[in-house]
Length: 610
Ligand code: F6R
Image (cartoon, rainbow, N blue to C red):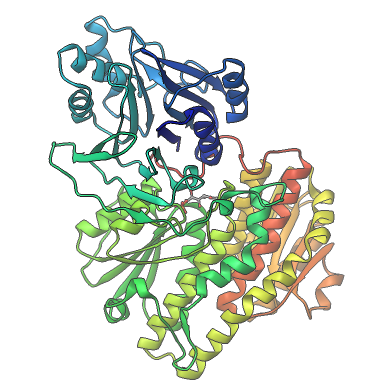
C-alpha cells in the first residue's frame, strides 16, 4: 500500500517523480504529493485523488528541483484528503518525509511531541516520524543520525524517504516491513517502493533489507543497519523492460494482462518441462526436491486471488502426490496456533511478494522449523528473498489491481510442483508425459478463449445491471467460482458469491429468482452430470444461467441462457482455462458500468498492511 519514489541528480526531479507515481498508482490512489528541494526549503504540492490531479497542480506551480520525493497514498490513518496526503513536513518546512506502512505506537509518540509543543497538521500516523526526526535535529544531531534515532523509537512498519534542506545533497531512506529499492544511475540515483517506478531510467538496483537505512547521494549511496553497522549491498541487474509496464495500446492494464495470458502462461513453464523424463525442473527448488516429496504434509498459504490458486494447488497435489494438503488464509494463520512440524513443507503464494499477512505467516512458519517455499511474481520481493527456496511465476509486471495473469501463472507453477513431487512418488512416466503435453497445449487453447472477447462483451451488456451474481463450480472448478466472484465484485462493485455447486441447495438456492444470474463452470469432466443437475435446479426456479462449457457440449445450450465454450484439458489444468472467460466477463461488466477497472475504489495492489 502506498507508493514511494525519489530522485537525486542533475535533472529536474518533477517529471521523474510524476511518471514514477503513475507507475506506482496501483499501490494506492487516495491522494498524492511531491516535495522537491528548492534553494533553502522543501516545496510541497499535494492533492486528493489521482496522480493526474497532482500533475496538473505541479505544472501550474512550475515546480522544479534536482532532489525530490513523491508519494501515492492508500489511506490507513486519517481520511483521504489533501492535509493527510504525503509528504509531511516539520514546522519550519526544512524537512519532508514520505512513508509507507503503519506506525503502531504513533499515538503515544504524538502525545509526547504535543506536550513538547509540536503542532500536528494531519491525522496520519506518518507525521509523527517527521517531527521525531526534527526533535533529534534540534538536539544537534546530523540528518542521518536524527533519522536513525527516530526510526529506533518506532513500532510498526515503514518504508520512508526523507529530504532536508540543510543537507540538500542526499535523500535518506529506510525500510522495515515495507519494500524499498534503490535505482543506480549515472550521476543520478532513484528510490522507489518497487522497480516499476524506475525501470525506465535504470536497470541496476539495490534492494534494501528490513532494518536498513541508506543515504543516497547523486553519485553514491551508503547503507547501514538501523543499529549503525555497515550493510554490504549487492547491485542486481533487472531483466525487465520498461515497456512491460505500459498499457501497450489497450484501454486498461487489466485487459492487457488478460490478453497476455498465452505468453505469461508460456513463460511460467518455459524451460521447466523435461518431456523425456515426464518431470519438471524447477531451478529455485534444486536440492529440496526430495525433502518436499518426503514431507508428511504440505500447507499452502496466501491471500485473495493467490489463496484461490492455493485451493487449486490442494486439489492437484492431493490427486497426484499422495500427500495431505491444507490451505490456510495467511491473514488467519498466525492468529491461531498452527501446528507446524519440521516434516511439513509450507508454500506461500504471493504475486507481489510483499503482502503483509503472507509475509508474517511465512516468518511464523520459518520460526517453527518447517521448510518454507515462496511462489512469487515480483523478483527480489520480500517473500521471494526470505523463503528458503521458491519458484518465480514469470508473469511479468501485473499492474491492474485485479489479479489475472498472475493467477494463471501461479496455477502453472503449482502444476509443475505437482509434477515434480508426483514423479518423486508414484506418478508414472506416461502420466507425467501426459500432463506435460497438456500443459504445453495451454497457450494455444488460451488464445482460442481470448478470441471470444466480443461474444463475452455482449453477454456482459445483458448482465451489467444485475445486483447480485452467484458463481458455482465443483471440484477443481470450485476455486474458479470463488475467483470469478472476486473478480466481479472487486471491479464492478456487484455483490457476488462463489459456492461449490452442490452447496447451493444448502442455502443459497433461496436467493434464486428471475433476477439472479448464476454462472456455472461446467466443463465435461467427472462431475459434469452432477453440475447439470444443479443447473436444472436453478432453471426450475427461473434463475438466469451463464455456463462455461466444453466446446463439444451441445446439450448444455438448451439448458442455459448463454454458454461460453472453451477447449478441454485434463481436470487439474481446467481452472487455467475456465477462469479466463470469468476475467473477461468481470472486465466488460465493469467497463460498461463506467468504472475504473485498473483502480477500483478502496483497493490497492499490494497489501502491505495487516
Ligand atoms: C484480487 C487480488 C487480491 C490479491 C491479494 C494477494 O484480484 O489481486 O486479492 O490476490 O491481495 O496479493 P498477493 O498475491 O500479491 O500476495
